[in-house]
Image (cartoon, rainbow, N blue to C red; front, top):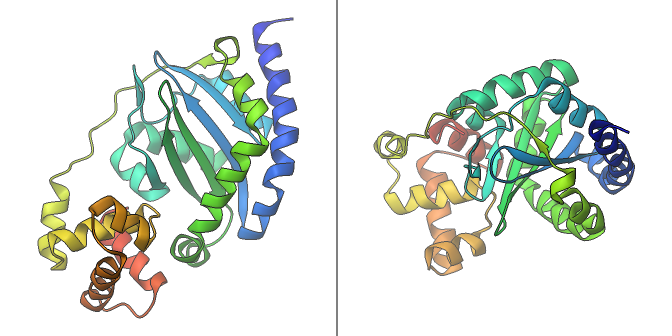
Length: 252
């Protein structure tokens, strides 16, 4: 049996298990889930609730997005589809084709780092923009909890798929670098202070007020004060309005 067919059989076995684990996500309008584990030299392991994802990448030799020779170039955090399409040309082309092939409207990606690899958990949505923004604003905690549960339930499969013999090698393309100077320009336009901008960026990376406080060495009460002032400055009545404006201001 060929190397491809052995990996495909493992992909099918994994998809059946992951489909059961991800079944509750359908209530959020999540169309599919995939878990990419990137290593160096273009090596990647792909887990998904659909074998079509594995076949799409493998047969078409689609580059693993946002990677270089060392693996994923993204820092740990939450990434919205629109931001990655703006900042990374390889992501824009790959996911535009995925949208067409699989009829998906939006994605949310959660990146985590490990000592020898990086994980990208991708959630695709078949819902309109308003509902998508509602999930970003109010239900990211559900996605975070799901990832924790998924890692426990799928631990055996994840361990197996990470083995060198089960990885596939995909081409690497050059990625444009995200322009960090952009935030200085945005800060002046939105009249947010540097500290407020830090809180806003962490908020858009799915952090709670307590998590933002830990990251910045502040008290949760101080962070809540900053977030309230951000709402007032941006004239937002609720969290969905705030996320919508921050997506534009921060170019997410």
